[in-house]
Image 1: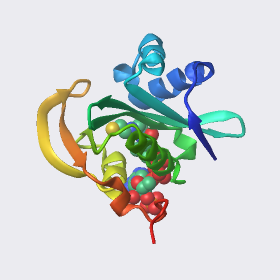
Image 2 (image 1 turned 45 degrees about the vertical axis):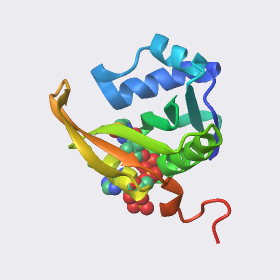
Image 3 (image 1 turned 60 degrees about the vertical axis):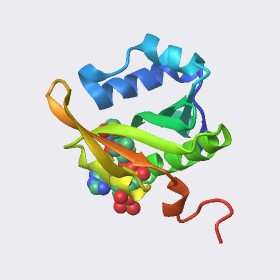
Length: 157
Ligand SMILES: CC(C)(COP(=O)(O)OP(=O)(O)OC[C@H]1O[C@@H](n2cnc3c(N)ncnc32)[C@H](O)[C@@H]1OP(=O)(O)O)[C@@H](O)C(=O)NCCC(=O)NCCS
């Protein structure tokens, strides 16, 4: 699996994956395109055999980074793709000066919640009825030091 920057040439596959993962809440092609060009955002892609199998992004606000659009193709899940993407994302984010990470997740999305917990995120709040179709609360999760939960963090003894 190759982890690299998500680029304009990936847009078609990324938009398809976005729709498959998030349905009506999927970002539009235009929104994804704008995200790739935004200086405050950083998006990474996971590629296997020349195909996009996953991607994720982070939006920077000073020392905080909000993780967005974590998506992995259904047939490629549970093979460490999202974990690898996010670990690489956090390394690049750290180089940009991001020190604290946050995200929102549907309170019933257990695969994602377990993933974030495994990376060191903890739930610090709830936004009631934040999501539509179906209506659902959002958990607000934060992580001050993702590297503390990594087995293979670079430089770790
Ligand atoms: C959530 C998602 C990104 C996980 O991607 P993935 O590549 O399958 O995740 P990984 O293989 O890297 O899993 C890493 C860890 O997360 C947890 N995890 C992932 N999927 C899980 C599941 N279905 N059930 C329980 N734990 C799970 C486990 O701790 C796992 O480690 P393990 O396999 O050693 O037990 C993927 O299921 C997905 O794309 N879902 C649809 C989109 C979505 O909901 N995105 C999140 C929006 S907030």
